[in-house]
Image (tube, rainbow, N blue to C red; front, side, top):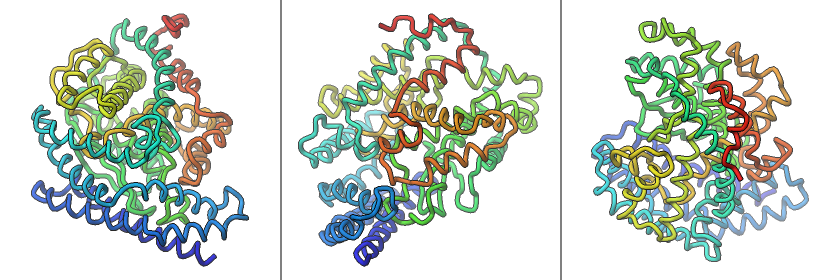
Length: 510
């Protein structure tokens, strides 16, 4: 298969360039001095342009055609046939985008990100407004490279959740919102759980040490990964042998860094579990943002906020923070880390209200792209819609339109839907894991995660991006994407915590 070998060599060269750019982005968000921002944007633009030109070159198309003929008789699931299929899909997307637009977007978003790190703590949306307008213009130009879309967001969603359309996401979110709102109302009508036990002084070093100890037990491989600090936590990969996570630390909150670490560890476990033979090719990636987020939410929430998890790890946490927690019972602590309330910050929000934060952002993305909301009005519209949805005022833009990094470090569109799709899938995948291995909850209670990690690795991680999300989900769970396992999970957890009545589960749902 000479053409396939030549194609693979070319794809690895493209991947090398892209990962060199990823390394520069990681450095920019962790250790780079502010003075490097201008040059960093140029460097990223250069690498991205060269990688784009190499990938979209006519020779790549010729090799794809020849490799498709060489692999035509192979089964759909074979590695070689899958490589050609997935590379072809990425190539057909990329050839539509001019290299100059790729460079322009890289330079701009690098500058925008650096400005955001200064503007956010200063509550300075006015500085970001012209930058955000340019991001919106570039995002529209990106979408317009794909004529014939039903909605301008569709091509942008396709980059992260291939095959999903804005109309499908809106329908899914509408169905989920209708079922979530009654539960939110029922819980928030009751007294808030006391979370003062976690809102105490906690030295950074001890927080980080505890988090690292937990993810080592999860299966995070420190020979192939590391953790650093940043403004907005993320996971990045430079190869299947170098997968890095970042976290943030607040020394007035014992578990903030922990849950950030567990979340990013979930992303990293996915990448670390991909078949090593896919190294350097388009198969060596997660299949979609929704499937990727399902793994971060599985390890952060389904595992990390479970009663069984804390039955094992709470005594260890008490040893790390004896002054703060020695007199706090497990019941009190468990209720504190699962407190449900209408709150301002998406990344700090609980499992029940979290998706309402995502839906707000998704709706605003559509309105910005469609022109129904102007950038100059975005901060005001954010405040109005947030107060309408959550019933609490937004006191400043730091906790409003500036709180998330996404619109300031990348295109507008396709950035947020994956979070809620991931929540839905986390429960659907976990239900399948329990069906295959009913002893997983008892394992978690003992601090053992090998069976769960192994099941996820074999069924979700190892295939990489060989299958699209719509192909993978029924293979793993036996059905298409469904909100029912997620709603069952939430009700099963929060009904006893808040003594909810069955009729409150559907109150007001038509």
